[in-house]
Amino acid sequence: MTIPMVRARGVRKHFGHLEVLKGIDLEVRQGEVVVVLGPSGSGKSTFLRCVNHLETIDGGSIHVDGELIGFEASGGRVRHLRRREITRQRREIGMVFQQFNLFPHFTVVQNVIEAPVGVRGEPRGQARERAHALLRRVGLEEKADAYPRQLSGGQQQRVAIARALAMRPKLMLFDEPTSALDPELVGEVLAVMKGLAEDGLTMIVVTHEVGFAREVADRVVFMDDGVVVESGAPADVLDRPASPRTKAFLSRVL
Amino acid sequence: MSLPDVDVAGAARTRHPLRWVASIVLLVLAAQLVSLLVTNPNFQWDVVGRYVNAQIIGQGIFTTLLLTVIAMAVGVVLGVLLAVGRLSENPVARAACGLYVWFFRGTPVLVQLVLWYNLSYLLPEISFGIPFGPEFVSADTNVLITPLLAAILGLGLNEGAYMAEIIRGGLMSVDHGQTEAASALGIGGARTFRRIVLPQAMRFIIPPTGSQVISMLKATSLVSVIALADLLYTVQSIYNRTFQTIPLLIVACVWYLVITSILYVGQSFIERHYARGATRNAPQSFWSFLTFRRRPTPEVPS
Image (tube, rainbow over all chains, first blue to last red; front, side, top):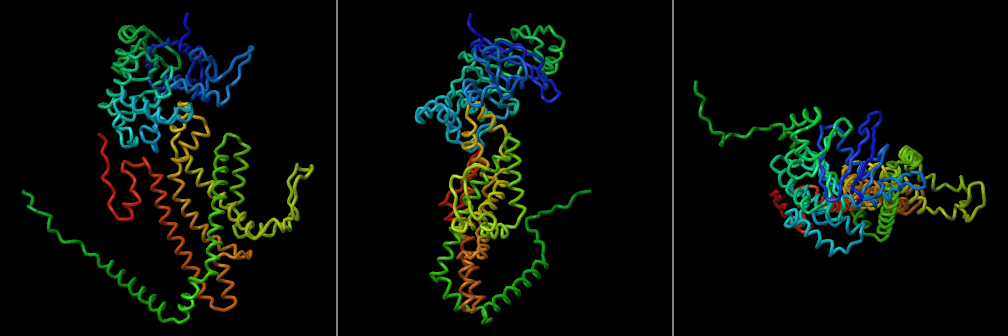
């Protein structure tokens, strides 16, 4: 049996007295696209941020490709990893943010090559070539020398996707990638994501786009109030939800 | 009821009689000032003309500039360290850096200068070693602390406190999403600071730093009290001999103004450099600035 790309077991997280994650179990197989749906405040974004240790979990465990994230377990003892080791783990996991978070003082191509050149030591010329190929893939090759603020939101988000892909991640995390976009720009970003899914990239997507979930997801996970309420094939969860909470949510967003 | 048919194209402009009054008053005052400058023989313009290019004044200017550059450099390096310390997660570092800023901003720089100059009364010998333990090196303070070093310490350490606050403000103005994006890409802390956060903070750090440089240039005149031959001390030592006080002070003012004007122009170029990507307009180039060309039209996102 192959190990799953992501295995979360009993993940707990609280901010002060507020318990945001109350024991999340989730497995994502290699090449699988999992869409996480749920009302705001359900903990879905927090869970995603735990997968690359932007948030430190308070209990349970997360493995990515067999490696325990953020901690080290040996001889029955568990210790926090050092920042350098966490940084190394994050290089294998790409992330796309709701607010894009492109580096505004770098051009588009500089944004894409910054991490490969800076932390992987890839030769600049080779990184530029790959960057242009990635930008072509997201349909923005002609914008390579523009600054992010000269681009529309949808274009910025596509650059952010290219930037994450430049590190050749095993896993991509999308944190509400279209929530900050004008409605007419949502489609271009979803189209790029759909292409990545078809190419077999393992993806966890937190979104409100039920249409995307139905069309692209291998599995839909519905979260509410810090727990996974249900999980299954898109058709099952979206059309025949077992839980009244899922039903109530879907009736609001559809 | 029908509305009247009006075309505002030929409308008469509003009159501003008070603006005329104010302008006339200011022009009269300016004329009086010019007449004072020309007719009052106590300005001794011939003396100003004789000294403004004098070699000894040049040496004073050199010392003033040298001191400004070194003290500013000390201040900036110290400021970065203190700002990082004040934003660090280590409570001891935070408190220590806060205490430093509190002390050096809370006491006059003139007092600090005199204090460094007279350090030998407090510590006749300066030594490095283990506290309460053995000493490794030691030196006579009077030999070690020259007027120049006292001036650099006094001005630089003081400047560090101000720069720390400016830099801290700049660093805090950078969106947290930037560090998060860098973390998610696996970029380490030091590189994130150097490549991502600091360059963006520069946009907020440069303008107040420019005024700090100009303040520093003027503050160097304080070192005349510890007998360091800067611009002010040089003119003082001349007029103490010749009693041409006013013309020599004018010489000093002229040079301070010349240098601050140059600094002002330099600052606007640096600001433009760090405005890269901050607006949709491309930054104006050096050449187009020189030739007074209009800024290029903004590129509209497609």
